[in-house]
Amino acid sequence: MKPMRTDRLILRNWEERDRALFHRINSDERVMEFFPFRRDRAAADAKMDEVRTWIDEDGYGFAAAEIAATGECIGFVGLSGTEDVDVLPAGTIEIGWRLAPEFWGNGYVTEAAEAWLAYGFETLELGEIVSFAVAENHRSVAVMKRLGMRVDPASDFDHPAVPDSLPHLKRHVLYRLSRGDWQARKRAAR
Image (tube, rainbow, N blue to C red; front, side, top):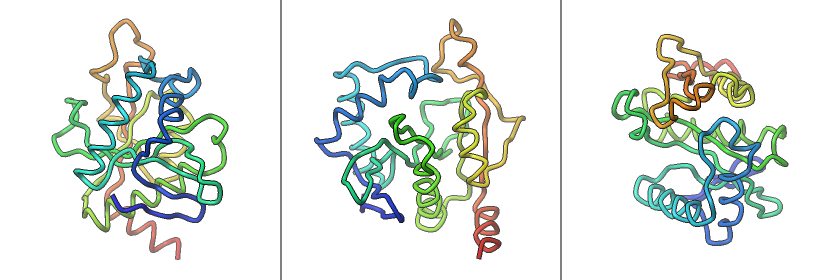
């Protein structure tokens, strides 16, 4: 992927220097509060290699987010297919994020997500982008709302990767944003 730049961030593919941070955001109890798993270092390294391949092949994915002024990687924001969520229609593209806790509350996710929405709708010409999270994940739901996404209660679902032994993590709310709604929101912001 060609790196994207926002006011404060560089969105790019993962590099070897990012391995410790990638492991941290995939094992930290606060970051992973609404996920049924934590990755040890070997699993995180394997997942980072997998994600890098997706980005190389597709030109998008859960890309590293780096603070432009310092070069510090803070987590990821990006677009991804939802093939592993078989309750969603084939070809569905989601926007997702995960940051180290010390970077929460600074607007980084919203800033990076806006760049990815523009890429998705303008470059990839997607008709819709979705996002989903455990309903109690108020931080992520707040970002979805800031992005102009609309909740679709009829499409809420039990995530197939969450075991029945964790019922509080199973139910997910789904938010949608169409290209038309995104374009209208951009026009209104001018």
